[in-house]
Structure formats: C-alpha cells, structure tokens
Length: 308
Image (cartoon, rainbow, N blue to C red; front, side, top):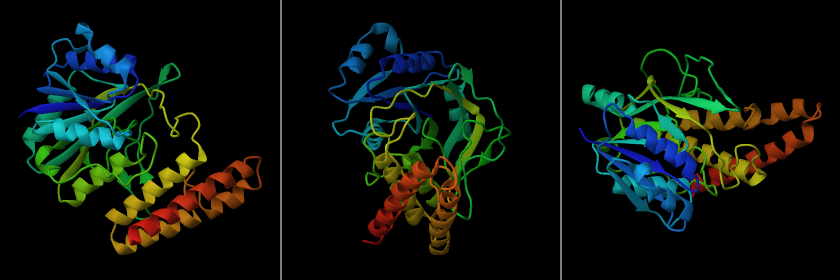
C-alpha cells in the first residue's frame, strides 16, 4: 500500500522545515510527499532548495495559483498518487510511527475510508494535556464536539475529522474534493468537516485513533481568520461555512433542528439569541452582540445559497 503525505504550506518555512524533519524520522517512510505551495511564496521555495530540508524524502512540489487552503488541498489531491493520502499541516510534526500506524489501519480494514488522530497542541510554552473521551461528533442539535486535540481511549468511529491530522483512502475520495464554495481569505474554516462528512455520507467508516498522533504548533495565519483575533468578516464567513455544510450533509429534519438550535441557543463561537441576552447584562455585551450579528448574517446567507 502506497502512502502519500500531503502538506499544504504558505509563508511558514520554519514550520515546514520541522514538519519535513519529522517525516524523515518515520519508522515506515512515506512513499511520496507532496508539498503544495504558491508560486510567489519565495520563502517556502528557498527553504525547499536547502538539501537538508527534504533530506531523503521522495518529495515533489505542486504549485497552486489560487489562494486559500481549499485550493491548495485540492491541488495536492490531484497531484498525489498514493493508495492512502495522509494530510497534515505545515505547523505539525507527525510522531515517528504516524505513517506506519496509518498504513496498518487501512490495510487492516477495507471499509475504512478515513482515519484521524490526536494533535498534541503546543501553546504558550506548554502542551495542552487534557483528556476527552468524546471526539469528532455532531450532536442531534448540530453542535460540533471536536476535542481531536484532547482525545483519549481506543480507536472508534466518529462523524468528522480535523485537518491537521487526517488520512483518506483514495478509493473513498475518488469523486470528492474540498468544497470550493466555502468562504475565507485563507483558512476557509470547517473545510475538513465538510470533506470528512462527505466521505462518511458516501458509506465509508471514519475512525479516530489517538495513537495516530502529531505535535501541533499553531502558527500565524496570513488572513482574516487569525488565531488571536478574528475579524467580524471572518466570523461571518465561518458561520456561512458551518450552515452550508449542515444543510448539505444533514437530512431535512436534523438540518432544521440545527438551524433553530443555533439561532436560539448556539455556542460561544456561534452565539444564539439566548447567549446574547445574557451577555448584554455583562461588560462583554457589545462585543457579543457584534459577533451574534455576524453569525446570523452568515447563517442566512448560507441558507439562501443552499436553496438557490
């Protein structure tokens, strides 16, 4: 079984160097490594010209003109030739047994369409080391339970995977690509959710195994979807993406339940009416109200787009 590792990158040569160094240390070497880069990303191309960066990896560079993670991932899928395509971020460093565990899982289960694992997040000089048994689930209300970075326990089936650490069987994604309708200047939030749910809805198993692990060093994003301070346009785009995905992938009754749950209750990230009412009684009321407005605009735009 041939394993391709796909790494989209943009203007983060230091992170990319660490990622490729981790791939050089794999106990089971990848059969192919595809790095997707923009032609004008001079820092990345200079990095890749350094002999030590690629080392002995069977590395190729796929160029993508269009900005954004979705375009880069789709370019990488087109360039990859493996039976399994393992995707990780440039700011992640796979553990030494990462490729070996991925290959063994797909070889051992012909129904396995996608496999994810834990990303150990390094933040502010420490590793987030909490434990959550419930990972990668979508509740009946449409609420996302992620926790991929905190998952513990054995391998189990899930509803969605996280982009920093997810692998796909080529046969399962032969006719699936990342959704180019999703909005965002760069990250296009929830593209991993849409892609993994497409695979599950096609009848394949999605499995999360915490032992299939990477170290994750969340790096700077060069767009509105900054990790430290999103703009209201980024919030609006993320809400648009979420509701478009829910309307695409849920059956009619569940999608309507999700619509009303997010409108009336919501989450900290996507506040609903009840959360705004409570927030208005606090010092955070004005900021919460602005976020709520952006979320509802994005949600209504997605609803109209899905109906057209």
